[in-house]
Image 1 (cartoon, rainbow, N blue to C red):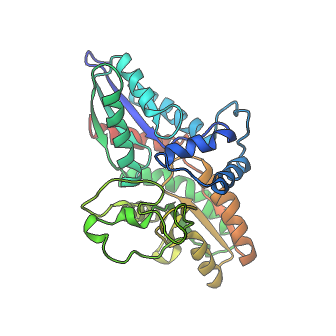
Image 2: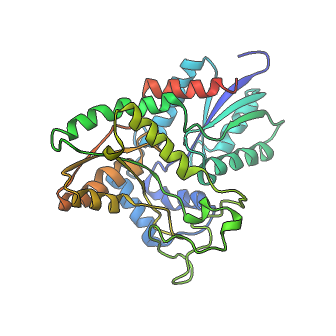
Image 3: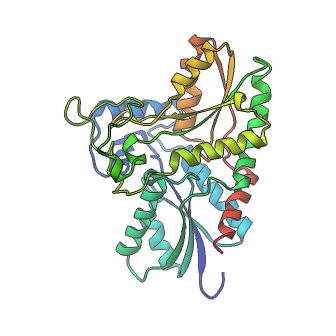
Length: 346
């Protein structure tokens, strides 16, 4: 460290350590909006399917384990202290900010481990950071906040490295097996500017109302704040996918894009859905497909359950075998990508 103590702060979503923590965890995700019992139980089922139990896993749940590991590897790469804070579970952003203050940090470079910029991710993380700086004791430190880094070339390179073996395996089953890139869906309302909100909203995805029957909550499961400009998220997701496809030598007919993991509660979410896309690919005669989620940097429930269990089960009756590119997790190229992004604000 220099005399002016600088550090890096990585921000991520967070995930519960025990099944019994699901209700409390969801309260953080939804900013206090209660979730119906059947939704809590469904999410407990999904987390149990990927190994979560009442006794904490010795190595921690996948998202926590891999995110902390990414922080360790990045610290070795940039030779600067790296902190990791979670918005919805331990280690909470507020607790990490308090520790940074106690450690004498004067300035931080802050990066959200969701490469594509959105009010639903980076916007919420920044608000949580600013709130923590205000509410935790002792003087605040200054920070540079990296709102999005979807265009980082090394990020596309990292994804392309992991795509290659999965695509080779799929094409032993289907010589023309396509790639389906995915990113987490977001509520339709969150990608629209304030001036757009009077227009009819697209009917993408499905919802189960948690309020009045037939009336989805105005902002999905939580309020993402007012916006006067469209959210860049859908465009940035597809830009990342296009960059990976180019590096992988895929032509336009070789790859598709869909949004996954539409919410099981709240207003309509953007599509196309993975399920609709898999149905179309099977109808076109494909026998195999490679799914690569380019909006996620490590294993967690949206990959280990939604893709490895749910989408594979959905595709099987269609005669379609789902292969998946390995998550980036501790990819050296990913760590270099993050370091390169941080260099830009050094």
